[in-house]
Image 1 (cartoon, rainbow, N blue to C red):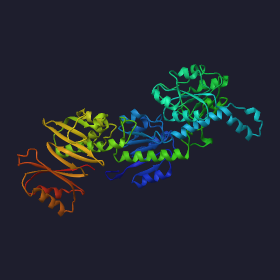
Image 2 (image 1 turned 60 degrees about the horizontal axis):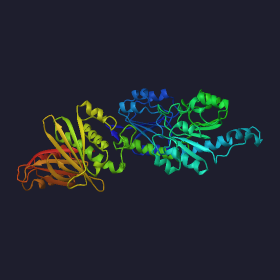
Image 3 (image 1 turned 90 degrees about the vertical axis):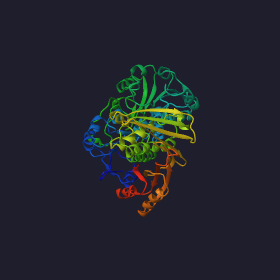
Image 4 (image 1 turned 90 degrees about the horizontal axis):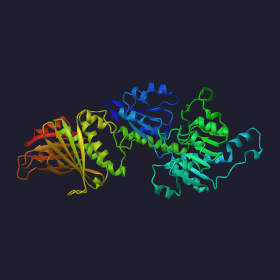
Length: 544
């Protein structure tokens, strides 16, 4: 959390639950809430910030990232990432995070609420009543039961919407070329092989896809006129999925009976007062078009969830912990099961330059045992992060570690072996350096999440790793380890793990001790240990 003498600073430009702002402060971060400011003001205010928390309005673009001088993490409190330029974040070495599940229910329920509204003319009726018009015959609606709903995008939110619409008696069909057939079957939803197949049969169309090159304007004039006349459309996902001018024209002509829109292609400022708002859009003037101001995540529950998740992710990322990020490789399986191996690998990477001086030119990483059955790319990246931090590269992160390694001319290979002796899983790292040496480290993880070094440059051992370890090369005769332990004890340094090994049982001229301790070890103590009879070399290895 501390960078030199400076406390890390988090800038929040869109509101999250106040208790999570205070929680970040309680962890020792400086937190500034910079709410209600323009994009240009935010871009000019980003200097000196280590992290940025946004929702949907602030654009994390090239201009903002170029102005940031120490930004490490961007956290989006919400599902979508339309306002975050993820490739640019990667180029600048900034970790990009979001909270992909926190507001799913809120977004799904809003889409269903909009469907009810446009089938039953609720918005028109409400406005009429408030203007003294109680002629209920003017607002006769249509029942949803027995009608066909078309869900475009069968991800988490699309699945929620499908389930709820089926629950009220609608027939649901869906189009999503990236989802396996068994998911459609599990939801009881008919799969449409093409978008046109869906458009032709639906009374209601609701969109739940991200905004990409493929989905932008996916519903335009051509698609609107392939629908039944009088179709109703809901877009509570992303602005730009439906061509706004074409939808306005189709509403005016009656091809589309009604539409409910929660998002625009270009969105207004959601913090300005009405008298200060200059935003306009063709759909604001279209008939039977009901618009809400991006309310998808606007429930008390979703606000709590996104605040909780984004604050936790940003804090952990700033502390250097492994978190699932948008610009990192996907983590297969249980992240909690992988994390200990990432911690182990990072420590093995940090070990090299604290024990050797010759530059590394190539690294071979071998995964054996149960862990060899899945991709361990994130563990390899952790190894590189540790190595580069050991070289003094403070700006390295999971996002830019491969590029940093390439800049130093370090190549890396991975191999996987199903069989391993002695251990359930084994991570073996071979460092090839400029001196022509091949130096090997190997480690494993014991329950509960205990990182253990089992081989150190040819010495076999079984040493649990703490934040501070002394690697001591010594002559093999009685009393050496005793004198080392006595020296540590005299300085109130507690030993939490100790292992001693030879490379060759016949060679008594050289042995290796690994001493894991609970307290920091000063230069003075190191010099006293070096002076002990039989001690040849002492390397202080610090992992924190």
